[in-house]
Image 1 (cartoon, helix red, strand yellow):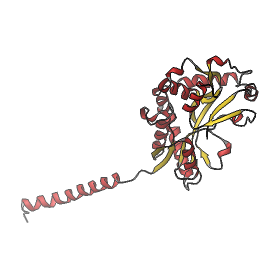
Image 2 (tube, rainbow, N blue to C red; image 1 turned 180 degrees about the vertical axis):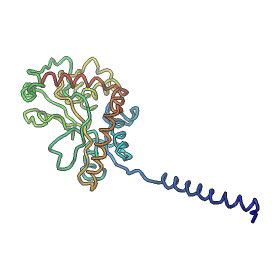
Image 3 (tube, rainbow, N blue to C red; image 1 turned 120 degrees about the vertical axis):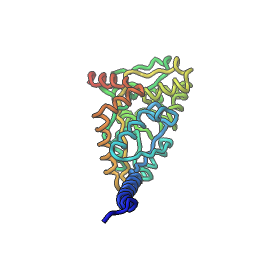
Image 4 (cartoon, rainbow, N blue to C red; image 1 turned 180 degrees about the horizontal axis):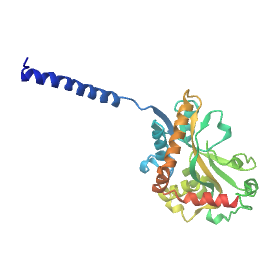
Length: 281
């Protein structure tokens, strides 16, 4: 039997068209697959993280990249630090960053693997003549005791170093942020403030340039701090999200992405400090 050409074409084209439509439907279904979301709390803590910084700062970029490699889309909200801490402790968000490690907070938080932060210590007035009586990298407790006659400024809710936080022989006054501490130091309301060196430099360069000739970092730093993402133990699947972050962090370390992030944001100086601390110890 001879099949008319019109019928023959319809027999060929209709199945092909159906296959194509099925393929399109399949792609559309794939595009609707939702990437799981992790909710995060952070703060404006330039130059590490900040709403007005390029890519929101190197810590923001590093954390979001690590989560992406681990299969999560990070959704981040900026808060004052005390509120960020409280919000995460209560399990209203999944995790908090950047955080220093503290055994005292293990009841509330599970800490990620660490990544490199910066040098912490004291800022002072240049005309104060303050010096350490002993290198704090060798004996921080004794070095702090040698400064017990001074008034210190600290930020409420911040972790500093264990020795400093436990030094009840030091007089400490709390404020809400590092900028306020620098202003109080400039006006001699306190004689020393605990601060990250890079944070102090950023705030002075960008907000308080007139302070450059008046204030200075008291070398050497007390510690080189590592930074962490702290996951709330109130969130049922916190371990799954922590493991995903750690996998992603290892991935960006392995392929050079992390080094690229540090370099682009100008954080190679910290590597010298890390080596110096190791050499002294």
